[in-house]
Length: 411
Image (cartoon, one colour):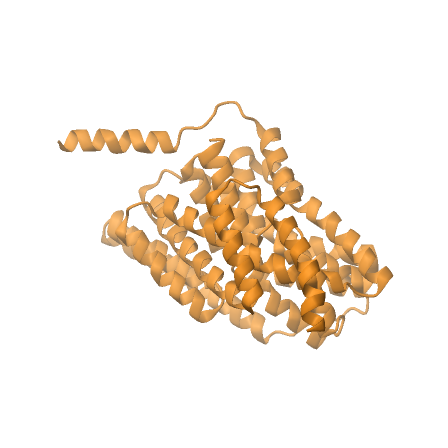
């Protein structure tokens, strides 16, 4: 009976990790180009789409590779979706893969945001953007709620320890209203201890390493909260580059976690934008596909035109790229190490909990009245029952917002 169970478990693992052979780097790059062009929903939905499309449906990569990529993205600073995409690129195609996939994922939304920025400057504000975000924001909650559920179910499976970590991180994230990198490290350590204990000597060294890494993360976050954001140079392009490089290097969690930091620097300290313009920048990020942090291109354009957009994008994504490809070789070499696999399982379970907690936080902000609640519920029901592409329902929600917003404003 034991042997039969072991064989069944092995067959299940092989099935989950079976992939199509000879896919190559270019189809994968094409996929991320498409995701960056039509992938709505922010970081939570985007990482869910990656799992659904690449692991479950197309079988272009294994479950283990996906979990390794997601865990690396959660542990290192930087926006979640872009970092997961770059990590997948590295594990599937080395530095070239990371570079091509990173560019493919970011460039479409960058070009869209630049186009919107030009229209914004030319026509003096975008009232319709608020109308779009009013309805699309509620639909996005439905999209990411379904993505979070499917991701948690597929990664945690029937493991009670992983589900326990999931619940804890859901509560912690909803309470703190941000993703805490220290908890991903702690969760990985807990699973390592219970499922792949290497003995007291190695276990103590690993625990001390995890504590040291958590301390580094805490010190970086503390330093960031106290450090000034002004560059000494009078050159505004240099200021933009340095400010957004710092943001990309020291902000942990999803791209949504960077918004408060940007608001403090852009509005309160540099006075580049007023509060209304900054809210418009956030709206641009939410109504365009691709990574949420692409809002920095909008901010950069308002400050210094196209050159400002480019400097802001380089500043935000260069640290993300480096913080992925530098530790990735070690992760790749040791991917079959039992302790690393256990650590990755724990960190991934923590990630699914943090993503679910983020759904709660974002839902409280996006669902503000009865119409948005109805839009969210209807969107959820339609997406759950029918296989409608997300861009289609996002477009319908945008039209609904354009109709409802003027009526509510007049009312």
